[in-house]
Each structure stands twice: as structure tokens, then as C-alpha cells.
Image (cartoon, rainbow, N blue to C red; front, top):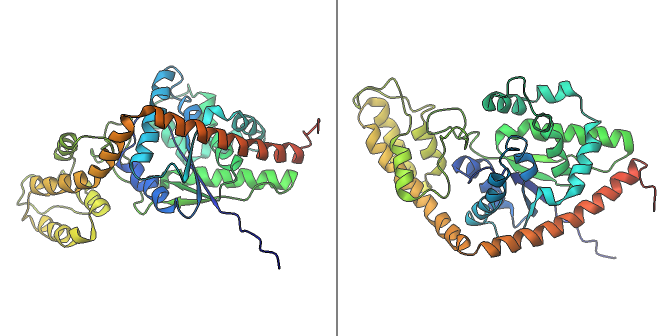
Length: 340
């Protein structure tokens, strides 16, 4: 009997190149990318077109950060020999697929998307919402589906985007015949890493992030300024552990060996027997221990930007080949294959 090779399943995920990546990105997606790269054929996209939806007046910022986010991915341990890195704008088939998908989604459905609603409010667009920003969930669906990705490692806040992609795949298949499988989301163990200011989400734009590339002293300074329990005026006052960024970060980045000490701090904090400063110093040490190997790997790539550029160029070429194959299928299904 003939052996049939089972096709390796695929991962597609992306980063908006608007700044360096932070700890929230790590717990939300990067950690899963690293852990799954040996199991899945992995593609990482630098979503520069999507970044332009709210940075259209500053394209240089987007261009510069394509290298930055790629270096962050490499620094956390993604292997360029196993993982394909590519640039969204260099795959024109994504844009064409986005146009076809636009007919499958209503304006009302886009406006109901919780992620879009939150980000519109955060960016303060008011009534001046760029059409490109409002419709980027459609573009995101094209990003995922052109590669026929099986799994998408993202933060929990991106769950509505995955669901919208699944809806678009279903709608396309019901109209034109089966072309796309519905992808699954792979979410981080930490639902959402709060910002250092206690805000619901760590964000580059809110200036409440600890970046993977932050030097040791910067991490220490950010941790020392971290929001804790506002009702605790003296270290002898009983404090809240639940929802306290200090302990959220300790739980997220502490090792198994740290757990006894972390539990001790939690117990003493609740009884008013330890101050914020002592716990913050402990957290800063844990974060810097975690970030040290990442910073070292990143420094190697920072000294060789041409190597990163070559990784992106070769990866983009590979992704473009996949995009062409998918678009041929799509056009055939939609009766748009005029010249065979």
C-alpha cells in the first residue's frame, strides 16, 4: 500500500509594526509561537498594511518597525530555519482577496466587532474613522485564509477577529464551494496582561508597557513605578492580591521554583506584613532574569540587520507563492478564471 504523507498543519499570526513588542505580546502570542514552531509549519507576518490604517501619516515609523518586530520574534527563540517571516504589503494577493471578502461582510457586522470598537475608542477617532481601519478585520481574514492557516496564536482580545474570519470562510464556502477550512485561535495562558498603570491592557500607545528590548535599569524603573493597590496607604495595611499588577506579573513570569516565595509574598501582602517596594524589587529581578537571554539574542541581530532583511525577503517570496496558489483556487470558485 502506498504511504500518503500527512500535510503538516499551519500557523499564521502577525504583528503590527508600530513599535517594539512587549511582555503582553509574549504571554498573548509569542510564547505559543515558540512552543509550536516544531509542530506546525509557522508563518509570521509583519502587518505593515494594517499598521497604516492608523499610521497612514507616518509610513517611516511603520517601515522602521518591520525590522524591530522581526528581531523581537527572533529574540524570543523563533528559529528562522523553521519559521517563515514575511511582509504583508509585498503580497498583493492579500489585497485582492480582501476586496472579494468585502462583499461577504456587512457594515453593521464590522461595527459590532468588540475588538474594533475598543480600538476605535482607544484611538479617539470619533466620527472620523478611516475606512481602512474599520475594515481591517476583513483584511485580517485574508491574511489568515490566503495561507489556509489551521491555527492562529493570538491574545484573547483577538478572539472576535478569529470568529469573524471563520464567518467569512463559511460564507465564502456556502456561496462558491469549499475552498477554506475554518481556523482555530490559540490563546495565551494569561488572558490579558494589564499595563503597568493598572489599565486593562498593556499597550504601546498607552505608554504602560515593559518591552522585550528594555534594558535592565529601565525594567527596574518601570516596575518601581507600577500601579499596585491604591487603597493601601502604608505597608502595614492589608493589601489586595487579586487584580494587583504586581502579582499578575509574578504569576505570569515566575518559575516553578519561585512559587513558594510568590505564595509567601501573597500571604504577607494580604496581612500587611510586606511592603510594595520589597515585592517590586523581587518582580524586577524575575523579569530581568526572563529578559536577559532575549536581550542577548536580540543584540546579535541588531548587529546584523542585513541578516534580518534576508530572512524577510526569502520568507516573503515563499509566502507569495502560497498566495498565488490560493488566489487561483478562489478565482476558479468565483468564476473569475477567464484566461486559463
